[in-house]
Image (cartoon, rainbow, N blue to C red; front, side, top):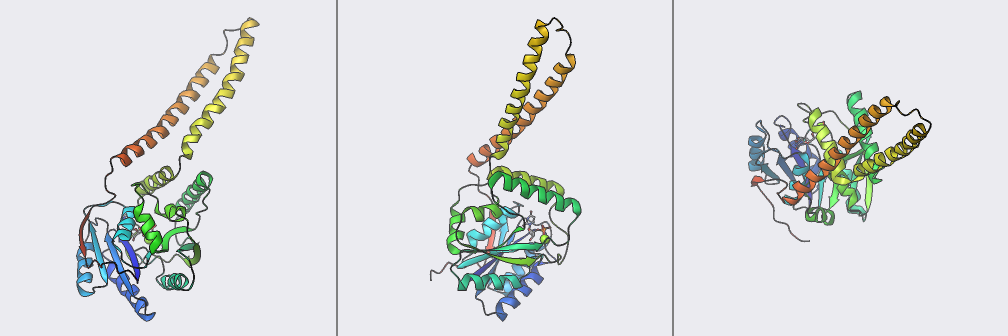
Length: 311
Ligand code: UDP
Ligand code: MG
């Protein structure tokens, strides 16, 4: 059986249509499936719509969060609840073409692969600014962790073994896109074109995107901490040069000059120190958050949960 996990946040205009489209395509290709909608604390009627759908169709599983925990949490909740032999994660707005699911499924079925990744062949319609920032973000990730993730998306198929591996991960602050390649396994790629959003607007505000980017980078790599070391080294070289110059001036009898240098040095060092403290503080807060061992999400209700049948 194939589980299709769909995180949904304020998607009242999308869920019914998405369910219908996906169901249609799965039936057409006679794939045994379940759809796991995870309502990420929507403020609109998404949950009402979902429970209605679940009532009508037993194959539609609906999970309700107690509040908005973010897309990452919703994905992981879906992985916890789903009972298929493989699971596909897709967006609720049909930007991930459902036809591609069939393609992924066939690759999974006919080959010995554990992960089928959806790669964006183009990025769809997005603003220049957004595109620029996401490029920068992926460059940083690549520099920091060596994973090339440009074009990566959350749209992928995972085999049960991978789902179980991800479910076992104890960490709370996660970056799904990277984690699913971090666990390794045999990976195959499928290219898809990002379609336009079916209904409503993107659920990411600039603030939530920046938060997501910082969170992703810091939860995945400690490379930013190396920036601190780097700055320290550069500053040390400057200090040595300036030190020699100062001593030279002292012995040659013109020592009173150099207030500019003092001011510049003060400005540079203090800003670098503050920046470094900020980075260290950020990691410290991560450790703090992980150590609290709070659950990643809280589930309020589940409708139609299937029990997992071992094949
Ligand atoms: N989403 C979510 N929780 C959030 C924000 C978004 O579950 O806090 C879901 C949303 O419902 C959608 C998917 O994540 O199914 C992608 O969101 P969106 O389409 O707004 O992002 P974009 O396509 O603009 O990257
Ligand atoms: Mg979208």
